[in-house]
Structure formats: structure tokens, C-alpha cells
Image (cartoon, rainbow, N blue to C red; front, side, top):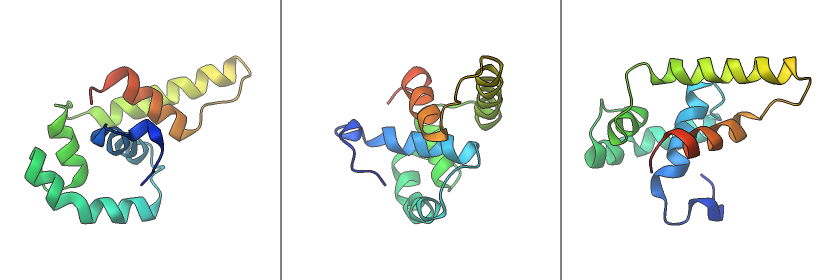
Length: 105
């Protein structure tokens, strides 16, 4: 996980960004493995379905179709960038913006 000062005092922030990356199919394997090991602790704190992402969904009360909503918005943003002939956001940049604008931490 990251040691960036962005995450100091905000324990869910990086986890939520990783959730977004998972929804986009951009979650690096080492992060996935770490999160899988963390799943029981997250479930104990937040509930959920036994997975790390299920615990996060429970923690911030996400709708069941949140991964699809994320993918749809990502696709829309890629289309806008292409239409305007500007570089698209990286998956990490998108995750940070999405979390900042849509998910309470």
C-alpha cells in the first residue's frame, strides 16, 4: 500500500482507491494479495460478504452495482478525453478523483 501523505489520518482513503482500481481491472496483483489477507480484519470491522471489497461496500454503504457505475464513468471519461484530444487520466488519478468526489471517508 502507499505511504503517501494523502492518506495520513484517513485509513479508508487508499482502500477505497484500491476498490476503484479493482472495479476497473487495474488492481496490481501484489495489492490484491495484501487485500485478500486483510479481508477478515476488514470484515470484522465493517461487515460485508467476507471479501475486502465487500467490507468496503458495507463501510460506505455502496449500491450493489457500484463496480459497474465506476466502469461506466471511467468509459465516459475516456471518451471525453479522446473527443477533446487530451490525455486520459491514469486509473490511479481517476480513482483518487472518484473517491474524493463520491465516497465519504
